[in-house]
Length: 608
Ligand code: G6P
Image 1 (cartoon, rainbow, N blue to C red):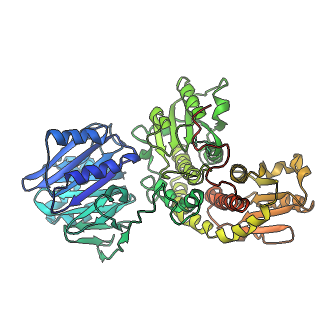
Image 2 (image 1 turned 45 degrees about the vertical axis):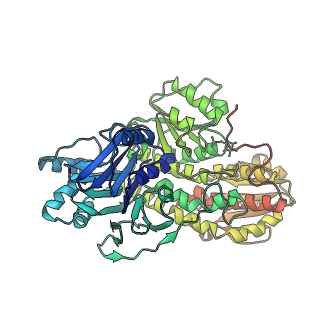
Image 3 (image 1 turned 90 degrees about the vertical axis):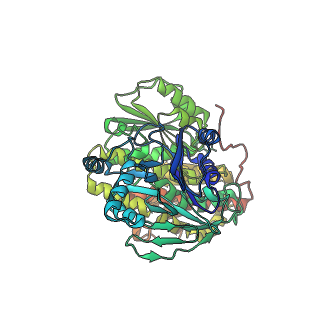
């Protein structure tokens, strides 16, 4: 995805900027560019492909200067060409880099064209730089011109702007896309990700929603959305906290469970505005959303469970038929493909052999297009799929997937709503769902607060040999995922059933030795599932119930109640996942198994 780097120093910044872009390569991109300010003006290089292509241009024609902005672009509006790569210019006065999507770029483009501005790219970004240029005519101060222009933009953005005649400052701003200031000695920086600046500083100021920063060599002044100066705290990057380090945690799995509020935020960044899903997050060809009439989801393991949840969301919100299948089955049968069917793969690694084989087979069939929801930008699945939505969970080291799963669900929720919007979902309902998504990181954080309580109940599982998980509706796949987690890392045999199926067989297994973990949704199924609980209690079964307080469930004889935060119904599958991850983790720790590398399992299954 797009990345921003900016620098102002007393030394030449071109190498700093290019190194910063290299550090952002993991995000995925298709072109890059740098603009350098010096006494003579603003000069630039842009290149399609890898950052190396940009380095080559600098080798052929060096650009030196003490201030500059740089960008890696992941195409949304317009193909990956040099003309569409950032920085974008207004005349030779202003240069700008941008992450995010400007939703109202079309009317703004018309307005600016009427004023005589010429457009040199197909991007939504170019309207911003002309808008600021236009504002400078009545308001010659760059900061004020940026502030007034940003108030006209709808959508998500992070920007960096430099002006030809001003070598003493650059302006950076964010709304809906992340941006961080790097603080140095007599030099300051900006980037979309602090990793891009770790070669020059470890001191960071995280800009908040709506912030505009005026950045000079000796000073950073931050204005909030109302234009008032704010002091934002400086935090020091802890070099011990990276993907390959467990930090304060005993196991990667626990570290990754606790990362979920942050990575879910990262998954949402730039993909939703205040009230809408930004469909351009699917790339330049997002018009498939208008055509899709059917969805086939194919995946393996935990990713398959994420797909099963999405079926509930897609059929409920969009009213379109959706089937979900494990890749190892799909690839070996004759598949009927109805007209305008989307082929959607889910994979944490993007290298799972069965999923890749299924994709290759699907490409020979009559699908509308192929979309991969994946965590690894450079993976084969991403490279071979027509469209990609990255989950942005960061490297997951623990074999038992946790943050990769909840970010897949987040990405699937974005996708489900985007499809639903083209199939009659009202603007009001879309807004409610988007606002629910915005609350998700906080809800997941709240669910993590139950860790201590779940650790206590985990002790009761240590000597069990079997466990049964029950759920209904979209909570059934979460029961499957909970049972998979428990068996993967604690080696306890676990199975999951839709709660209504209990009486058709599994009830025969219920006795005082069988823990039964039940996920209770707070929706129309509540009374039904309470009846299922009675069926178990009447047979002396030991129930562990996960529900919110308003369900009126509580501790009773044979019932251990665990509280899950009360959330919008659509978020329940994601939030209920958290206590089940914690449960399997603590049971495995009590049993002394190898939590991060369970026997016989691999993180990425690249063989059939
Ligand atoms: C392996 C991993 C699982 C994962 C599955 C699918 O079995 O151990 O955690 O769910 O592969 O992997 P993918 O990378 O395609 O999501």
